[in-house]
Image (cartoon, rainbow, N blue to C red; front, side, top):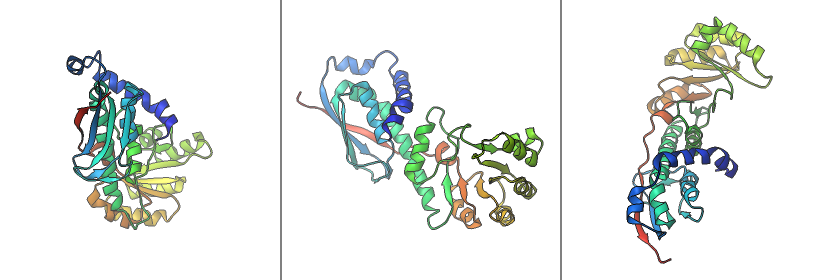
Amino acid sequence: MNPITMKAQIDPLLLAALREDISNEDVSTNAVIREETPGEVELLAKQDGVIAGLDVFARVFTLLDERTEVTFLCKDGDAVRSGQLLGRVRGDIRVLLSGERVALNLLQRMSGIATCAREMAAALQGTNTRLLDTRKTTPGLRILEKYAVRVGGGYNHRFNLSDGILLKDNHIAAAGGVREAVRLAREYAPFLQKVEVEVETLEMVDEAVAAGADVIMLDNMSVEDMREAVRRIAGRAQTECSGNVTREKLQALADIGVDYISSGALTHSAPILDISMKHLRRIPA
């Protein structure tokens, strides 16, 4: 992960997570380890999956003590197996114990998303359709979760509301219709910014094409209507489908010929990948 991004955007997030977990002190650790004691612990996978977030995992410990040494035997994007040794963390045992939960929470979450993304992206292999994430992310963790999607083989949609214009149903209602919403967006947007509009019916598809939308999102439409929508659009705009996208539906959706498929499930429903720190031992100073 880019070191500038790590320090500027991720360090504050990690520090907030550490403050949440160590409001005053780690009383359990301090009760049994009264002074600096060198030690080492192993990082182990307990499930098959795709690993993501190793730099984030390591940074938790170096924020607590920059002398902590973290050695990995794999890299982000690698497929790992249950029981596999992923790395080792060496340093003050108090740091290893106090940082364990925050570091594992983030690594497990990111690896779970990468695993889900890898499985869903695999269903689109051999097609021209790309898998996108959404803004349905855990508040405060978006940069990490969207990174994990990329590690797994997916692509990022907007990072935030400043990234691009996406006119959804309530924007369209507020503007008074698809044509007016697109017109107003074109009037306001910078020259190079694309305008995407969400549609739910074939009539709205026709309006979006006539209005000159750059991307048309087919939201919660039937497969038959989406296929007809792609035919009507005829390459005059890029196409994206969304709405209750599951792995089982991906191949059928790709067969429609859409350019993109977006899935909130990549981030809001991905289970964690079970990873643990085990076999802590003291080492000679």
